[in-house]
Length: 77
Image 1 (cartoon, rainbow, N blue to C red):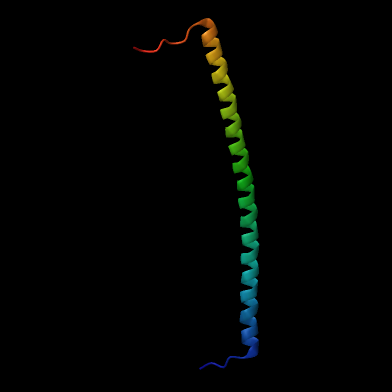
Image 2: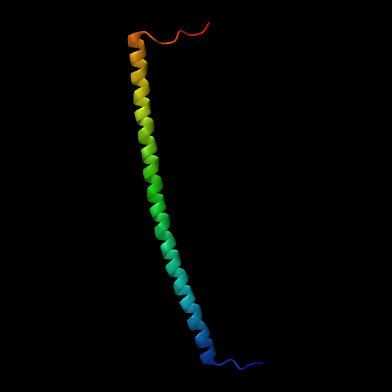
């Protein structure tokens, strides 16, 4: 069996530490990207809510215009 020296263990541990540092860096990058995506998603949700609000107001206005012009559809009997 090969002799395991402290120097060999130290070199392996240094390599492991370097790899862990790279992994930590990549995880930090992924976190930043996820936070950016989360921000975009929140903005899109707010935009959709604004569109729904605007459409709701138009629906009310159209109903008012139809009643005023007396062009509402009669209920089917």
